[in-house]
Length: 359
Image (cartoon, rainbow, N blue to C red; front, side, top):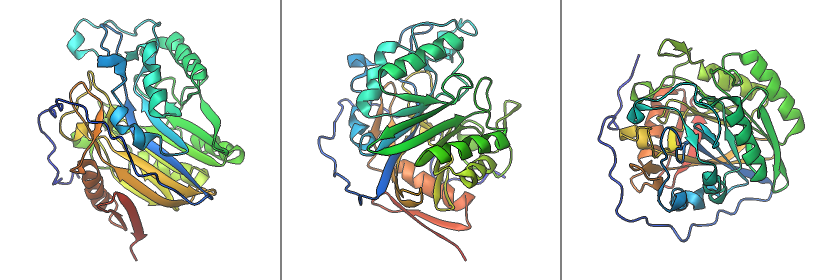
């Protein structure tokens, strides 16, 4: 049953600010030496080169500039690449109406936007990763390797990633219910992959692209979701299974809106982080424009010490900006209370997440 939501769901697209204010300073978070920190975001699609070219002003250099201090302040930063980065590849279909074309291929020259912002790894397990076929995926992987970025989620191409940052070994794997991706619905196979990664890595991060899409799918059910008559998987079942297998953090995307968070076995599950930087051909109206950033601090064994939910918001044809009204955090708090009433998770006014299991 769909529950009510106090946060407005339908509004016009947020108006872009006339000037971009860049935070010159951010408090440096000093953690104990025995902890590891990661940052998580949702969908990233920074420009397009098909069927026409859409590149942000200043070659995209300002697109993530105002949130970069929040993205780089961690040992590793992860997101979901909504599409691929390539100048080659044949489209799986022709777009006759450019206004409604949803084939996402980003210009290769924009990859520095991602590296300059502090990203380390991206999921490419989603419904747009194969919009331009294998050649475009292989080109994306090559560009990532040239720029010290990592990808995960495609069978045979970037299935999983293992990399080191600040003396810590991270294992990263991504899943989606889409052709060519590591399949979210094959939970037993996912469990085996995660279990193997945990034997080789200090911290295992799992990405999942599943569930319905849009404001009607804000809530997280504990059963299989269907959208457009497609089986989009049971993200609740999947997340619990991979944590039981050794995952230390699970973060989701796909619904294009934020969803609840859950703490399970002292590990964080963010069921959807929505759209983070999607300035073209992706709706940023209402809650679709909420762009949370989650920073997780954990012990070396993966147990969560602290998590912080920073609220950002997207504007039309611009990147995310920190939202002083904390709308993303407030929405996540509300959805968490409604979807997981058995636990008490509070995101306080300082953006720190605290929780306890209700007796």
